[in-house]
Image 1 (tube, rainbow, N blue to C red):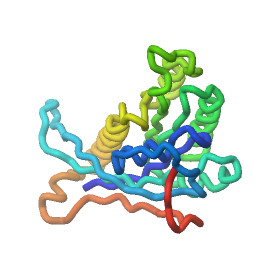
Image 2 (tube, rainbow, N blue to C red; image 1 turned 120 degrees about the vertical axis):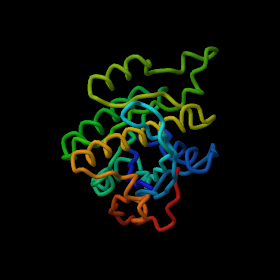
Image 3 (tube, rainbow, N blue to C red; image 1 turned 180 degrees about the vertical axis):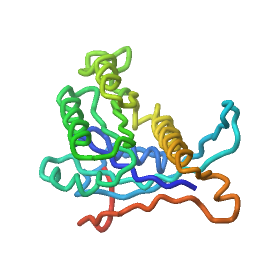
Image 4 (cartoon, one colour; image 1 turned 90 degrees about the vertical axis):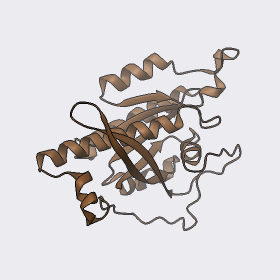
Amino acid sequence: MLQFKLVLLGDSSVGKSSIVNRFVKDSFDEFRESTIGAAFLSQTVTIKDSDANGNEAQEVTVKFEIWDTAGQERYKSLAPMYYRNANAALVVYDITQADSLEKARSWVQELKNKVDDDSLVIYLVGNKIDLATDDDKDKREVEENVAKTYAEENGLLFSEVSAKNGQGIQQVFRSIAEKLYDIRKKQDATNNININSSAQRGNGPVDIHLQRPSTNDSTSCCS
């Protein structure tokens, strides 16, 4: 098993906690309270490994240690404590709120300026596509092509999702797992390490040590 630290960043009420809750528990709460400080959750995904010829070799289990941060401005100073040593960051905006994309851009810029790690995977996610259906297109304030172009120009993964109905949620985390696994394989190849054969020889699961920052919210509930 591979273990990675993932942090969620974004403005308040964009649905960060709803995305995590859909991923971890496959449920949605319409009236979830705002996160205080940060909440911690974990979940695993299974991906397919492939050999040098592109043939599927075996299944690989990836465990995410997830820090869901509060979006309110008064908690912004705490964010570095949670994204420090992260392997991936999910930066979320609300497609019905143009200002939330601007906030997402500022988070991306902060990550690029303060996280000295070229292997950090940043995924830009537009949430609440369920609110902008063909019958109600006027609710959309952020066009998909605008956010997608920004993501491409900045080397980010990108997709639009709905935490409410689950559309695209699993694929987001699966894509992150596949990207992180690919990065880890390349790093291990450079160091002549086979992460799969190591576990098969009985050395136990391959693990990435994660620092878990403390939070004032002992209940670790999310919104």
